[in-house]
Length: 430
Ligand code: FES
Ligand SMILES: [Fe+2]
Image (cartoon, rainbow, N blue to C red; front, top):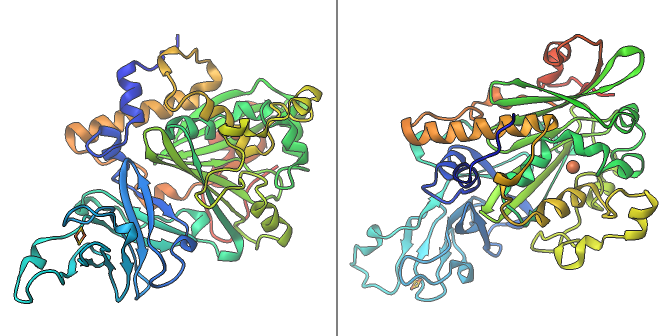
């Protein structure tokens, strides 16, 4: 008998505002927050962001440093979004108080010149890092800051990777649970396997489409889990798709042929909205022009979005679902695009899915174990201050794998080194 989540655990695992157990857990990690082009140049316009329920403003100062600070001025709470980004700081448009990227007040022109009030006011500010085509933020206690992350997609040369983001209008967990649920691929994405330029043409697709009853096995990794989905291949062998999940919200899709590898971060914006980060990379070669064009056009796991990163297919237009295409079987759900096929269903579950009403089966084992690990880690952090796994760079050096193994070989053993990121070594893929 598989236990569903209690209402209390469902709340604990989905709520990420400051001072909640899961919110504190997330605040022990470096998280992706901005694409560099959102703050493109020194003194370019500040932008508004929301992450884990916190309203923030990001700006790139005159020296090129990126600041992420609280959104409202400490004087009388005017929004700093309307401020002037000039001479190495952000100046409030109301009475001219000015702050640097560290949140220090550097000018207070409305006060007498001999006032020392300037040293008494500051903005909350978070450290940032620009690296691998992403701006990262750390929002936790300074003395618990982990080393800077070393995910493989962000360590390869820029010509080998592509990163995009989109807003998803549901809680981060139900988005992430799609990322570790390999069994839906044979249904929801079945049409796209044969047509999407970033998916089609691999032998693995035939195994995916030929066996719709995968058997799941889950193995521990240092930073989370490897989730193995086994389907029948030829001669009594098994085709394994292995998805790594690293605490709290990093997942990778198992590869197909020589297509670039891909994966996601699912970062809470608030309890009812998350940012789905999607990355593609090839460990040993540059992305081709065709691949890059396809990614920019919203193929593969990427999605076409408006200037606020909201997908053009969204709940207001029923994701442009095409019933004729659904009926003919060309497209299982009738929604175009792999990313939107996922998002359309996950958003439409409601912003926070009621996990007390689920009926989980054995293909949900990865999800069950990931929830269990998250809840345990959040409770241990809250009760004892135990820092969660996944912060160590060694825990981040994982890869997804697609491989055919003899029956009887446990997947973690059979895949071996292929489950690790190895510089200059191609992915293991069928
Ligand atoms: S509210 Fe910002 S300077 Fe007065
Ligand atoms: Fe999916």
